[in-house]
Image (tube, helix red, strand yellow):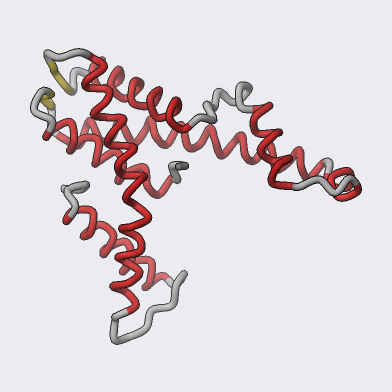
Length: 184
């Protein structure tokens, strides 16, 4: 599943909380610095993929007449071009491999900044980070459904996309994350 920019702070917090609670990692300066590094690395990865997708869309637009003439499936063409250009943008398309790499980069950056200590294998700590990313991505759609359901029961109907709806949605989303132990 693809990470989107609005989710990076939540994933970063989940990673920091999971590291704190795993029992074999000590956060030397607390949750916030670890979450900050994780969010920066996640955001950088999201930005790289967005740049790649923007370039793919440019290529598709430049060749739009040919695509229509040959009746090529635009979605398939998008994927083929993305696959071909991924290496140029340093984007790993396999989400499992990508999140494994991100977990390694987060661990390395936090260790270099002296934000954590551990006396187990590096791989074990990296797996905590990877599992934080993976479990958040697996559960966020369910959390969104819960929040949407709660909003639908409000006496005053909120209009999706309005500023008020977005504020209420974000507040309820964060409450639900706290309830599930993904945010402190």
